[in-house]
Amino acid sequence: MGAMNDPLERTELTFLLGMAFQLVLGEFVRGVDAEGYRELRPVHGFAFQVLRHGGATSTELADRLGVTKQAAGQIVAYLEERGYVRRVEHAGGGRRRLVVLTDKAHEHLSVAGRVLHELEERIGERLGADGLTRMRAELAELVRGLAGNELPPLRPVW
Amino acid sequence: MGAMNDPLERTELTFLLGMAFQLVLGEFVRGVDAEGYRELRPVHGFAFQVLRHGGATSTELADRLGVTKQAAGQIVAYLEERGYVRRVEHAGGGRRRLVVLTDKAHEHLSVAGRVLHELEERIGERLGADGLTRMRAELAELVRGLAGNELPPLRPVW
DNA sequence: TCGGTGAGTAAAGCTTCTTTACTCACATGT
DNA sequence: ACATGTGAGTAAAGAAGCTTTACTCACCGA
Image 1 (spheres, chains in turn blue, cyan, brown, purple):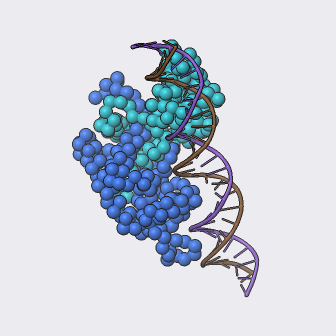
Image 2 (cartoon, helix red, strand yellow):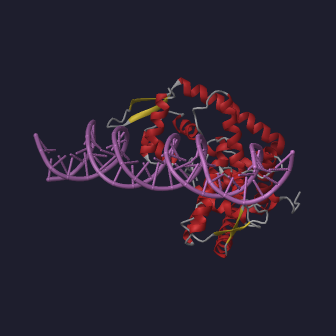
Image 3 (cartoon, each protein chain N blue to C red):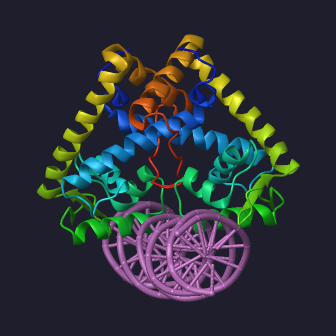
C-alpha cells in the first residue's frame, strides 16, 4: 500500500478512470464477442440500454447517446437490418417513429447482462464486497457531482 | 443513500465507469481548451505522458497507445508540425529516431497538470479526502487485477 | 554478400461520425 | 382555408482518424 514506486499511485485520477474503463469495457466486449455477437459494438449496447424500456425515437436516442440524429439514424438502420430493432407507429403521430427492441435484442441483453455480472463478480473478488460497493457509491457520487441529475451520455469516442 | 429509485444505483459498474470517465475527461478537455490548446486532443495528452521522460520511438509510442505504428507516425507528424515534439538522432542507430518533447509541450504539460489537479480537488470536495483516496486505491487495484503489472494502453476509441 | 529483421513511410481504404440541405406531418394563428 | 412554423426524419457529401497493404532503408549476422 502506498508504495511510491507503483506507477499507478502516481497516475492522475483521470487516467486511472480511463484505464479502468478501457480494461473493463475490453473484457466486456471480449465476453460478448465470444457469445457470437461480433456484429455489435459498445455503442449498440448503449443504444439497447436507452431503448430497453418502451423504446424511443431516433432523435431521443441521439440525445441520450450524445450524437447527431443522423448518426442515430444510421445506428438504428444498422440494427434494423440485423433484426435487433423495429420501427413502429408512434402514438404521438407526426413523422415520429418509435424504435423498439426485438426479441433478438432482448436475448442479447440477457447475455450481456450475464457477462457484466460475471465481470463484476471477478472485480468483487479482487476488491472485496465492501470495496465494490464503495466504488459503485463513489462513482455514482462523482457522476452526480459532475452531471447533476441528468444521466450523462455515453459517447463512443473521446 | 441507497434509494433504489436512483437510476445510478441500478446502473452496471461498466457503465458507471464509462460515465465517470466521460464526464471527467470532458471537464479536462474543456479546461485545457480554455487555456488555448484547442489543437490538442486527448490522444495527444496520452502521447505526451509516454514521451515525457526521455522520449520514445514512434513504434514504442504505437505500442503504448495501442495503435499501429502508422497511426503513431501520423500523430507524431501532427505534433511536430505544431512544435510540440522534435525527432532527434537515436543512440541505438538504425532507422530509429527518438521523438522528444519540446519546451512548448512541457509548458502544456504543466497547464494540463494544473487543470487535472483542480479537477481532482473539485471531486475531492464532493467525495471527501478519504473517498478520493479510496477511489484511487480501488481503481488502481481494479487495473492491476485486469492488466497485471503492465500499464494498459489508453486508446482514443472504443 | 546475402538474406533477415526491425523502424519508418506511403498511399489507399474503411468506418463512423458531422455538416449541409432537404422532405414531410402536423399545429397554430389569422 | 391557408400560410407559416416547428420538430422528426432522410439524403448525400465530407472530414477525421484509424487500418491495411506494400514498400524503403539501415543495420546485423551467417
